[in-house]
Amino acid sequence: MLNTKTILLVILSLFITACGQKSTLSGDPIAGEALFGQVTIDSAPGCASCHSTEVDKVLVGPSLAGVANRAGERVPDQTAEEYLQNSILEPNLYVVDGFSSGLMYQKYKDILKDEQVRDLVAYLSTLK
Image (tube, rainbow, N blue to C red):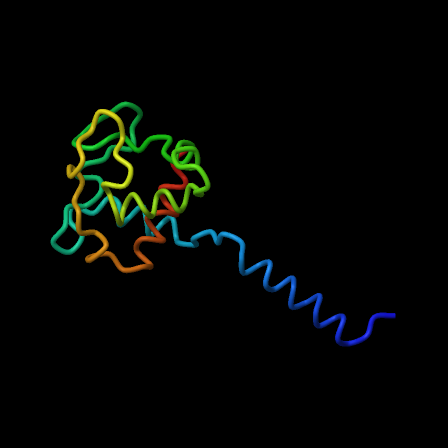
């Protein structure tokens, strides 16, 4: 029979293990889609001003059709959600072939709230 100390140690080790795992971002994809479609977000251009969600339709930046499938494969040891979040907040980290560094609006990290970023990532994660 296990004593109380042993049970507490098992629970503690499970908790520590869980804390070490990469967390997935949780957001509202419906709110993210609405935000994506806005013409402007505060003083910044809205996502849909530069990105299409139609296959091979380029506006200013690359089409985001199928981005959910590609995002998890772009950077080793990075989840799709992490890649998408980083691409929004630090757009020059990962520049898609055929597009220039500095092309994407650079200050979303100063304008978007954390919840808005999570919502955008949740929406983009639906674009398979």
